[in-house]
Image 1 (cartoon, rainbow, N blue to C red):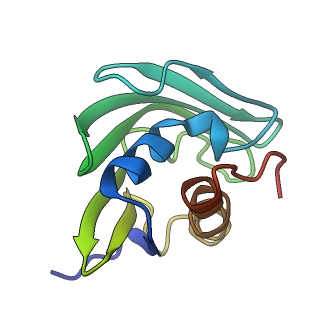
Image 2: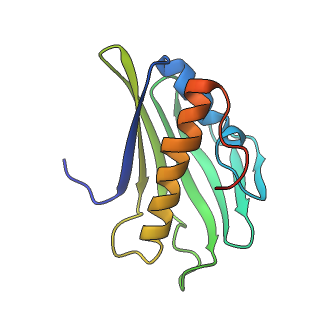
Image 3: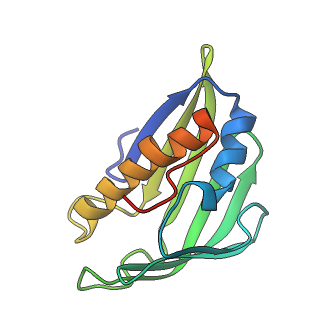
Amino acid sequence: MKTSDFTTTILVDQTPEEAFAAINNVRGWWTGEPGVEGSTDKLNDEFTYDYKPYHHTKQKIMELIPGKKITWLVIDSEINFVEDKNEWTGTKIMFEISKKADKTEVRFTHVGLVPGVPCYNDCSNAWGSYIKGSLFKLITEGKGVTAPE
């Protein structure tokens, strides 16, 4: 099935359970100032992410299947570098975790972040950096990037 939603994938040596735990440690990989506030590891939790002055979002954890899947619904957004500041509101952020031979695959998809949306280029580049950089390091080395890149 083809989709135009932004997707990126990483492969790691760690178990699906280790990848799942790292993703839920949002403060360990999604950096910014002041960063993440609220609980990020239980179903129906809500948390905010701020990277002032550019980005504010509030997420609700909609799906949490240990070792397999995490889905956040963006319930509020203010992306200050595009005309439609609420562009992310109503979009979903998904992490699908699966075994691939002796590796674990983490497939990240931001449902609703599609080509043609004003923040697509900047936001997809940022997600790529967070997933392939900071989250990858947190899963594989136990420590993500601690300052905005």
